[in-house]
Length: 259
Image (cartoon, rainbow, N blue to C red):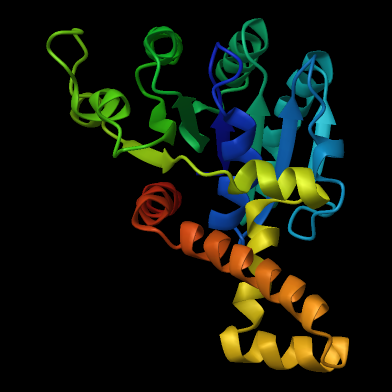
């Protein structure tokens, strides 16, 4: 795949969470860019302090975005290693982006990711979006913000006869789960970062190393050392999340499609 398009005809399903948090972690060692195509939301400023996405985000209107998709035809040929992540807005924005992919003959080079929340209305939008895409499109369905210890969420994976929900994990050829966590919003609200940025501290230091660093950095100030250590523990939680089985499954599907 040369392109990954995160799409849903409904807003508020976590498209930007997938595009700006999960995919950069999965593609961290790849040459990638993120193109936001949305007439309403400009996510670029929400990640102004990120190290991971520095210089990698372009935010465009629908009119600008459809022109950019035309350029991807050339980009895909000239830069074979580059992966373009497209974050499409909801509603008509997503529909126009889908039709632009069709018009530019980009379907065969693209993996479409359709995220949805564990909600009946969003399940319908998932099906509606899926049906808009051509039959030959490569599609990954992602249950976003899922708590699989909650039976009300689990039925959106395994199905529920009473509510007439099919076994979604078997219905779609590619299906994965993005588990619920406060880390995405915490990273964004604290420093306008991604979860991958949040995980960097734990990737650089183990417990002993961070305590040694904090001791030297603060000259043994207990309160300041504690603050650094607490930041490291949150960073470790972010690192553990990105290394979890669920994210590993997402990574294997996405990078497997890339191969």
